[in-house]
Image (tube, rainbow, N blue to C red; front, side, top):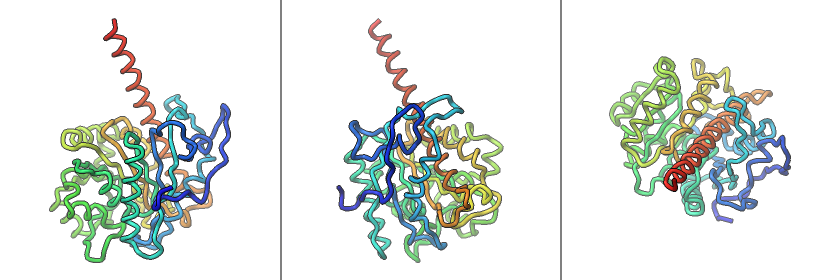
Length: 333
């Protein structure tokens, strides 16, 4: 086991059968006999959150929710159990040192990439500060595009150190990404100060408001963004800050707001995202289980969002395989 990746403190006893749950499908990495197509990494960090947060508790809350969902996706009439998904564990966190936590995150993602170079990477936060070290690890000299679903720009000044309000600013100032390659979808309301708007314009960040996205619809909006990104970058990283959702749908976030996205809108956007080969990694951040309702509204919404993205990914991979078979038959004809 890695020095910076530890076994999760919670895991399910898996069962086989026709009617399995997600808990029976996602496999601990030690039990994988083939290379996983998707690797799930828990990143339990919340010390760098500007607002008081227990986002560090979410990776295990996410795992516990797996018993609430089946693997059959009725909207697309597909059972996604054929997708090989491995839970590799959690990044080890330092008790007090945020910068050391970020170094551990970067090292952990480097190790995951070395072990599973062809996999799709899903990181479960944690606050939004985790996105910066994850992308630094994934970059490897490549040009990275960022598709950000968020109420906030996350372009705060770095003078107070790295926090959940600075990941995009960190990456821009370090030259890891270019502003023109960052697309933020879901901005709304009264939650970004003028200095942040000024910073976004300075760096050339693409700001797409929720109102604008609704006029276009999920399919057209994602098609336009991905077409633009695919012409410029080597791969796309998707970061989903759950505070993009309206407080009515996601009370369990540190910076919940009215006027945000509906859950069905986020699900539609993520289903569209999953269709694109250029998307190589994704994270879900800023979920505080301690703030959630007793019905687990937020936790369930995030798990549903994750499963929607995985369903789209699975359908895409099946289509690629079918096309390869047809092409081979035509070549041999």
